[in-house]
Image (cartoon, rainbow, N blue to C red; front, side, top):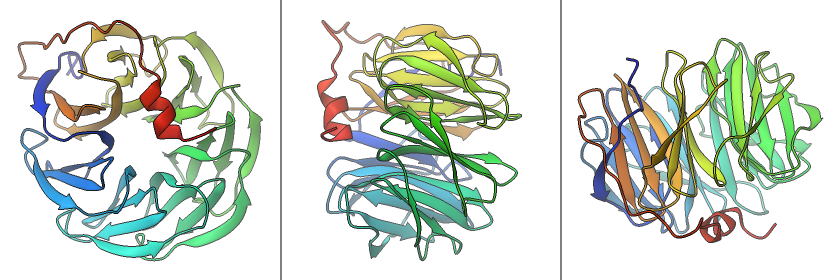
Amino acid sequence: MSNVGLIWTDLGAIGSYILAMASLDNGIALFGENNGDIYRSTNYGLTWTSLGIIASSRINSIASLGNNIAVFGDDDRHVYRSTDRGLNWTDLGEVGSNYWIATIASLGSGIAILCVGSKIYRSVNYGANWTDLGITTHGRGLTSAYLGNGIAAIGDQDGYIYRSIDYGLTWTDLGLITSHSISNMPYLGNGIVIFSDYWQYIYRSIDYGLTWTNLGIITSDASWGSAYLDNGIAVIGDNSRHVYRSIDYGLNWTDLGEVGSDGISAMAYLGKGIAILGDYSGHVYRSALAVTHRHHPTIPTEPNRGKELSRMGSL
């Protein structure tokens, strides 16, 4: 399993503008697009089927909640829910009143959280209903993660981290951790969690997100996509098409070079040594243990931050 996430194959332009990916179970995966389209795979990301335009606006976040249930949120603050592993979807209506749903995370046992702008919402019935907790973050909540043992964390646009130890019911503001927006936050197990920010820095915690160490500038551009691939292996994709890989629980990182055909916007681990990533040109890349050839796209002339700014909205 030491070469998990090391080699990537371009499956081609399957969609048009991928923003979110998620793994369900038994090889089922989903990704959402800028136009509200959902794509579904039933063979560990090898082939994909468009389910059509489900949402009325871009899909920023997708999460599997267990029991065959998945949810996603869109730019119009609507939550969509599937009870058949992402095959059919029901619009649950609008949650919140400002900005867009940037992140959703499952905390287990049917409990989930999402962020609408600077407000945190919580569900205790597998995403069927959502409650405003009355908690306001400093900036818009952009990323969230479940760290096990009832512990969850949220990173916001202003660089603050919020932490809960009671399955998302109450939250503690840990203060300003970085001076840049926190863009993604994968949990690596054993109390270890990392996040990358909008200006190439990676931070690491070994105490379930309570304290953080700045590892310095790692990526060559802003990053949105990340995934934990088990056995201490993690990957992060940036806006300059590069994939970075760690094999020691996020402590050290290796630049694998350019992989995407455009900025890498989403990643997911599907199990069995298989990972996927999506980019802003709709390409899906797949990493599997049996892969023997690597795709080398054209080298870009300069980093493309325009699509990153489009994704974040006006700051």
